Image (cartoon, rainbow, N blue to C red; front, side, top):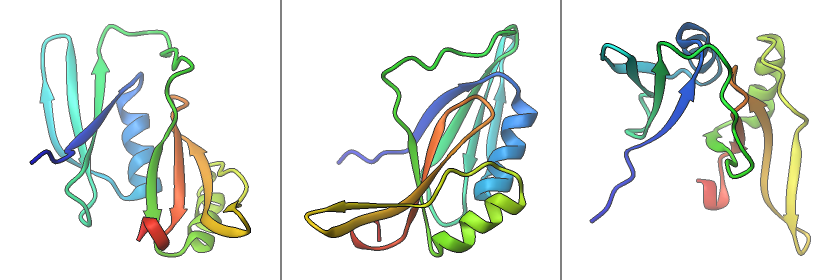
Length: 131
């Protein structure tokens, strides 16, 4: 049986990205593997075994072009309103709270935030299919 274990993104500034993911989502380094030209940094939160892998290419000086194919990562939280307020206090620049509806029924409440490299992250209220 297949089991998703991680998603990888390339980041320009390791320290800046680590600070963002720790402040925003409580992700901690599970493992850091350094190679001569790059490092792989695996981040994890205690409530989930799924990891975010940051790839840091040491010689990279220019920001990565995210292209038009990338969408977003998604994180579920217990209290969306409280998290949105905390993101504002932390100056993490959250987008507006949104209600996503289909046929008059709310499918999800969420907001988006961007990490230091411009990757979008959807922060979703726990419940329904996101329980």
